[in-house]
Length: 101
Image 1 (cartoon, one colour):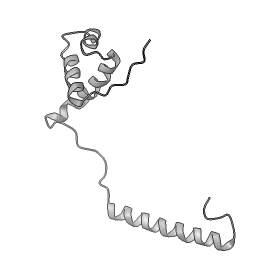
Image 2 (cartoon, one colour):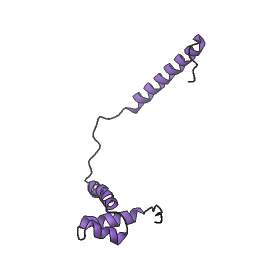
Image 3 (spheres, one colour):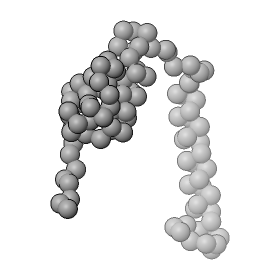
Image 4 (tube, one colour):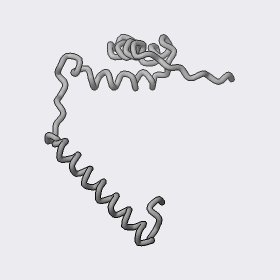
């Protein structure tokens, strides 16, 4: 049996197949035969379409969570980097394990 080459499908093709599956006119097996893809693949393409359909019409939900203060996070990163560098230098001066592991 010949080994089948892996194919890459365009986003337009995936959307077309997923919309055909969402319409419900034909079974997954019939669509798989028509488009020459596996029925599981059609199900995988249909899932994101159904989950994100509301985003198309502006009905998507806004991300929930507290607002993030980027200045404070950048300051904390700078502080931790400085402490790390200081401790790494002290570790090499004392003669403990080498600074580069």
